[in-house]
Amino acid sequence: MPQKTVNIGEYRALAAVKQPRVRNYKPTFIGSERFASKREARCWQELQVLFHAKKITGLKRQVRIPLTTTPDTGGDPVAVCHYVADFTFFEDGQYVIADAKGWATDLYKLKRKWVRLQYGIEIREL
Image 1 (tube, rainbow, N blue to C red):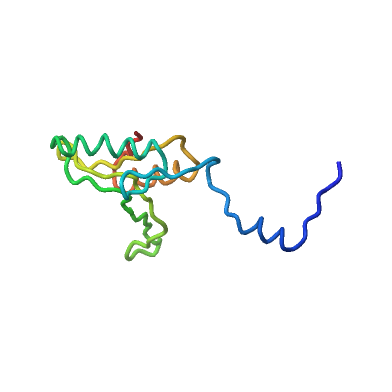
Image 2 (cartoon, rainbow, N blue to C red):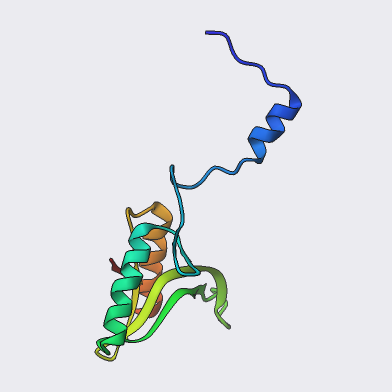
């Protein structure tokens, strides 16, 4: 099968198009708020109902949670990376980290374990 050749202009045009992480990815909007998926938007609407019914409190979206480590030599913890939780809230006095997941990537699994070890909180997958 012959290979197709492209000129430099075509190559640059192809390289400039950023491919989505997930095929056929289209963000979902509710009002002016942008969500990464329909699942995340639906979960937000369900959590909003619980929030207005006062079943949960302190509902927030896209919360950055620092993941740190302590050097072997002691001293202050060092920030290594962060985990961005889709939702956080309080339910029955307990802090809940929730994520609308279609599937768990290897990076997500690592950060989920790290959150559990560092904060003692199990991420709830919606």
